[in-house]
Structures are given as C-alpha cells and as structure tokens.
Image 1 (cartoon, helix red, strand yellow):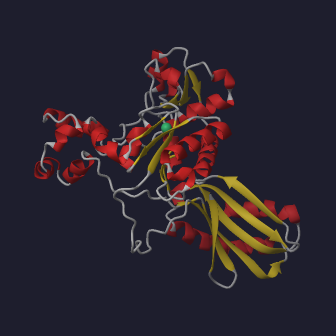
Image 2 (cartoon, rainbow, N blue to C red; image 1 turned 90 degrees about the vertical axis):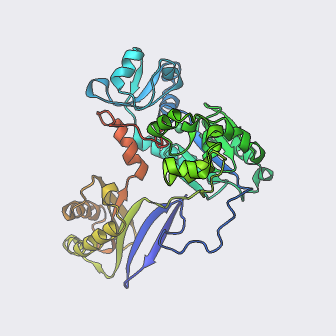
Length: 405
Ligand SMILES: [Mg+2]
C-alpha cells in the first residue's frame, strides 16, 4: 500500500516521500486513548514457508523435487539463507556454511538468490494482508504480525481470515504461508510454527493457559541459548517451572527481564502490533516560475536542489539505505521523464549526468526538475548479508529476522 505525501514548503519546491504502512510518526504524541490490549485482541502471525526457496521453486519447476538452498557459494565461505524442506531432511538449515550443507547433501541445488524479486513478492503478500487490516507489523520480508481485532470480515473470525489470507497467497502468488492465531504476539508467533509448512494453528483465549504451561523456556521471546542454559541449570525447563517462581525470585535472578518472564510464562503479552513507517524514497522537486531554457541552466539549478536533498537525506537518517538516485524532468509541454542510476554514492556529478540524459529525451525548456534517492528496505540490508560470502559471526538470539522458516 504505497502512499505519497506532499508537503509544500517554500513557494514552489516540494518534497515527495513515498512511504508504506503509514502510522503516526514517532515524534507525535501517543494516542491519548490507547485501545485496551487485554482480552479480546486477535493477532495473526503470518510466516511464509522457506520463502526464498519457495519463490525459486515456483519460478523454476525443474527444482520441484530437488533439495534446494538459496545462498552464497560453498567455495567462498557462503552461507545458506533459506533451504527447502527436502534439503532440511539432510540436516541443512539456514545460516549454515554452504560448504557444510553440500557435505550433508551432495546433490544440493544452490541458487544464488534475487533480493529484488523477493522484495516484490513480499510487497504482493503485504497487499493481501492489507485487505484485512492496516495494522501490519513486518518482521522481515516473509513474516508479519496482523492485528485483525477490528476486522469484521468472516464474522470477525481470525481463524477464517487466516485461512482466506493463506488461500489468496497460494492462489495468487503460488507459494505457501503458515499462520498462528492468538490473543497476543508472543503466542501467535509460536503458533505459526506449530503446523508448518502450509498450516495454521489457533490458540483461543481459553486455551492460552494450557498452551503456555507446557512450552519449553527457550520458546520465550528474549530467552537465547545462554539464558536457557542458566535456567536449565536452575531446574527451569518449562513455563510451568517458571510459574512456580515468585516475581521476586525471577527479578533477583534475571534483573528487569524477570518481570517479562513472569508475564510470558503466564501467557501475558500486551505489546501492540506496530506498523512501521518504511520510507522508500527521499526527493526534492521544484517547479520554476519561468521554464529553464536549456541544459546548462538545468545543471546550474540542480545545485540548489542537490543541497536541499542532502539535508533531507540526513534528516531522515537514510544515507546508509540509498541504493539508487534519480532525476525527474518535466518539459514545457508537460511530458515527464525519469532517469535513474543504481549506486549508493549519489554525488552532484551523478545527478548532473542523469539530468543530461533526461534533458536529451525532450530537448526543450524545462518547467520542473526533481532529484531523489530510492532506499533499500531496512530488512533487506540484514538479509542481503546472508548472500555475502562469509560466515555469520553468531546467530541472533531472537532468530525472528531470517526467512528460514
Ligand atoms: Mg518464514
């Protein structure tokens, strides 16, 4: 769901920022009357099954019955970003060195991955989610929380909504997605894993207590391998064991995290679903009172726009995510052309080169000139790291930001 914002500033310069999943900017006052986050919430955690590998198998049917891993090359210290379920049967898993994966599964088919394609499919999945709610919190390209508490479709049944979402993803995009349905994010996330691949699992409010009681401690948000080992040493293996501890005991042993453990072990998680505001571009454009007569004047005028753009990029803390620069030229007859250039430098000379190419397409006076940069998805930066040819230094504790499951 892309929307554009236009904020007029000086006489005729305008800033055009494309954002998706709009929510109030963080510097705004919090909602004075926040919704009750207790009983009655309906959260879906939707998670594609071996996302990158599924997209590759969809696009190349010859891979269908073969073990497939997407990732870097085995002789250059590459790692597995995602592998399909057949490869998993050989013990291959994400973040594993590709050289080891190939030893475990000698006939493994390695696909080099195409982040632009995965981002596009991710956008299409988000569009399906948005048919049910605007409260979508993406966790990575293939995973998101949806708050459907206010959605009236399917008689308000989140279970039926999840079914419909999964059907739409399957029929329209030809990949599968699993879902967990629960009264909060913590339980929905665990539940989505319960019937994977291509399944869903609902934990109703009545079932929360029993469901959580038997969970091993390492299923809790924030409990990584180090904390889990400490708990095991103390004889704490499940949430039932944690519940036997007083809040005082837990805070003495685990500090501030003790309160969180106290709540999670009882199935309490009041965190709201927070739609991210993801900026996709930053740009500046100006309509001139008098048309710019020739290329030299355009190039000269670009200097001011360039300075302005630099300030905007820094104000949005977006410099590290730049992956393209572009120029927009509107001629006196209102025809408009856009020229872009891959790269993360975006110097004045780059923009001058683009203006040169753009101007030649029309070869007449110019009424509007715009300069901008397109930004990489913030998650893509992390996921792209999986395609570089080096082993990860350590596995993340949360494990929620890979596209492996
Ligand atoms: Mg997944």
